[in-house]
Image (cartoon, rainbow, N blue to C red; front, side):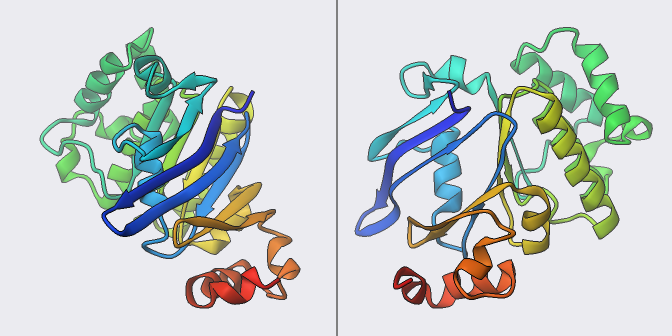
Length: 246
């Protein structure tokens, strides 16, 4: 059974079709890249998976649980991190993790928090208010929050956008370890094609709300006559019709 199953998902805003009947899965121990230019439908798709937005039609299951009829059970298996959703800045790192841990009913919460503070090199900031941390440090706190409940589905939207290259590399390694050793899968969005090629086993390219391309990020560019994943991304953004002809 897939960790995540998206079936014929559609969302419109008036006459604008944001997501146009897309279907895809994320398997256990898999990192799938959801790629595309701004306005392609990535964030709308993620918000529907999180249950923040209601689709016009289609279905979503997490561990086989329908997120609309069994929302609380499905959401308890999910977590999320994005560079544009910082944690409350007036709370300390420890307070933030405590609150979210209680919301997710994490067992042995204090022990779990200590593990994550060490794992993300945050122990020295435990009593520091998140608003006083650098953007990179805040990102690491957000990532610690995102795996606090050992989610089966982890949604990461531009998770390393504010990190320097060395820290971003360390974070990618930690996410790989989390996926390899756990029971979950990851849906990852990024505009960094080097990062995507390094961490994702499969990618989906969205264009105007539709899945235009799907495949292995290391071999997909060559299938469409492109040298690099970045070159393919640019073509998806500027000339998607030329790819459909292939």
